[in-house]
Length: 192
Image: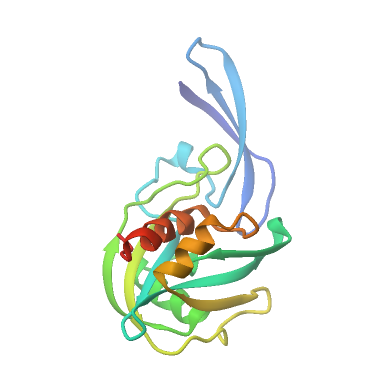
């Protein structure tokens, strides 16, 4: 398989569609359409080292519980449970992004960064977007005062028992990454 061409199909500030021309395993020219936050997309630039975004798995030091968020997500037309997350701004380190996003979405302060994953991909058939999962300890009082007008986020403490219940409730919408962490937390009381 070999990438032969890339055509930008849309022109928006944060996310665009690309049509990629590639040779398949039989030497036939094919096309694939996907979304990317990068121009050119990573399959053309080869720049896979830095994540586009961070997903923060916060464990509250004093409450001894995980912090999740309940957020309105337009594509779902409703609320989804997830972790605080956000784009890594230009010139920003992963650590700086984590501290900023956790404060904005939950009102909490990072006390320790325990683990940072390499860039990982959750929907590579649709996008080249990568994230780093960042496990942190935190402190403070929950708040959504840092939300922008386009965010509707409610931060919540969750116990292992509540996590186990949430992970089995088919009526709730849960982010994939969050479900994976919470299913382990619900069974073991540990986040990794």
